[in-house]
Image 1 (cartoon, one colour):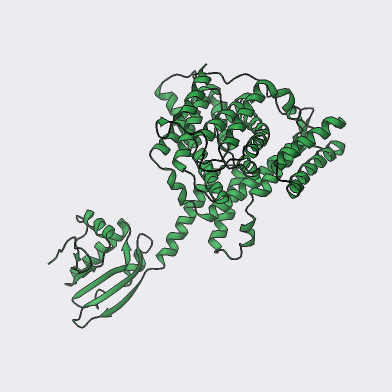
Image 2 (cartoon, helix red, strand yellow):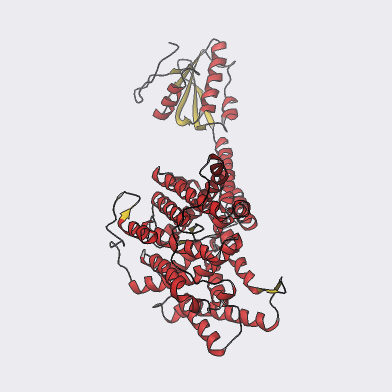
Length: 530
């Protein structure tokens, strides 16, 4: 009953705009329903084993992963800011919750997931999703390439088996069968588009390999060897935790990290889809949708999640561009949980491995390899570092954060070297310093070294026509320079300050006392030291 009410609200209330949700699909573009439905089915087939694997990895019951795939997929497909993007129970967010699961149990996990959803919704409501624009292209390259390697390596794990409680690599016939079926899947995905594009090649590959295995009675690893996917509707469940400050102190750090990791991966995926489709999604709306989905996860027995770049690329490669594919994929997962488990559990893992291998190949930014000798060395370093951190730690948020910080520091260093000054003395004996480049914390030292206080005449003008004061460090540098000229009995003027620079100086007038020259083309803020 609770799930039915939630689904009703999802379809008929636009959480982001708080008004009736009157359009389920975007009718401004033509929708190929056959492609959308087939793409949704393919997405569901590839999402099930991943969601199960991530749930098991984190120590959750397998169905918790499938419930997350259904809830995340449905809510974000309907309400999200990016048609064509697929969300589900992702490993990036599941890994964050492992320690909480081990220390406090599943009920605390559900509470942390719901709180993470609230934090994500706040990011969207206050329109903070735009800050994803601060992620430089080399960081995007590193993020995507690292993720491609992770996707590929996770498929290599399927070539292992458990014998007498010990994990070992497949050998002999099982290895050859697994490798052959994977190769068959890859071949179908590569060759079918040359014959017809009427159906998604990934779905055809899965069905063909399934038919071969069942028809010839081939012994190989199946989905049921990972876990059972049979169950009921997600039950409404209020997390059974003490409502105390101590509980909040326990779950808040995990919720905060999960919210950050989920939004980072989701908004980066959104940017990637924007580039592929040549359209623009809404990061703020996506943040609200992700948050709403995670809140529902916390109360409907799901482990939460975020955008899944691999499934998103499967969806796009199948030709999907609207919301319908995501909705079909989510509903397919629910149907499989309820009635289709016996069929899905017999799907060969080799078919799904082949699909994901092709996704990994398609995810990797091969262009970054071709242009590596044309990129600045610091950009190459940042891209490789982000990729290595992504692969090594499986922490996408940390990798991106480190990449952004390094890129920002490099930018600051390069900008600091650009400040320079043209010097001349006019007919009235006034010395002019025409500045070029920004005055900020990184360029303060170079700025200060350009002035000859002792040798300058009685009156000096600093012209900011091609420069600007960017921060408090710049203001402090001007303050110290003013004091030096004042102690030398000389007068310092500022000219051609931009409106934002004049405002910055006015706000800091208790710190610095300088002349701002009258100028026929620029308004005067103040005229001190007359």
